[in-house]
Length: 371
Image (tube, rainbow, N blue to C red; front, side, top):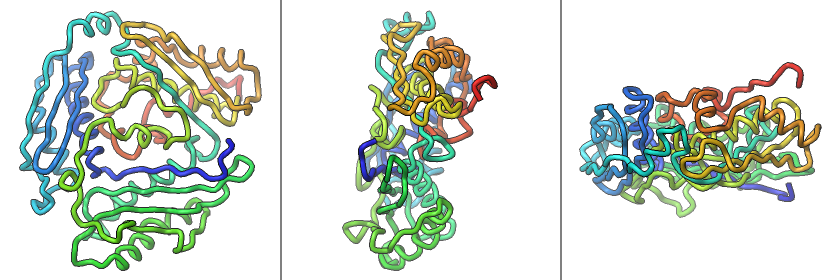
């Protein structure tokens, strides 16, 4: 790594784009719960007082898509009509039947789309994730949880973290920026003090870092009251860097949310992370980036490569053999090996898809002979 500092951002669950991601993945889960073999790609877009659901689906499931969307809007805290976006928003549904030209390839255990996917891992954190994105995700989750203590906070928000590096190791939190909407009758200085006390300071203490108040910014323009789709439209799949590694690793060709696992944009990215994480966990490298690529209808990847950035402790041949033994990266092999045909996706759609132990692609399964 040649950067002396690196910055990553995350967004709160109530961010307009994340509202759409969570609606899309809530629909995926609702369908998979009834029909594990369903094929679907569903996107949402949100603006003031309106949600539009688009996509295609092939399933035996019976799901009220609009009702799923309304439940997510309420769960995410959009209950105040003053925000111009609540559970009484107009929801238009334009979800059709999956193209038979796509279906014929997927039904034969082929990839639901073409594209390249990348998975990354490093030894900077216990989650084997880059520190900047892990801290950013922890901040946005803490901001959302702080609503219980600071009820004047409103849904939506962002966090951005800059980490300073020395000799390829993180040594300092150089800057933290938070954007968080709040009720009009609370002054910015009080909000900044409260968020520092409840969110920022405890998290930095947990990681053993200190930060000067001069390097903490809240709401860069000085004011933010109107939150959510009233102030900024949302769209499924627009936060793919937030969803991944915060810009620290390569980004593949497509988003994750709203897609069933036959879509390799999703399952291939999860498989690549699984392989990369296990390589690092096994001590075969300090950093690893795994690349996969498929064409639509392909049963096996046309590319499976790994880059260890000069940190490998063994040969490339041995690392390739390790990956081969760890996971079959055919489409069917990934679905079976990671048990992906089940409703586990809504919780992925906020705070990142990686670095969270509850997901199957985050499990460490290292053969004993490599320890």
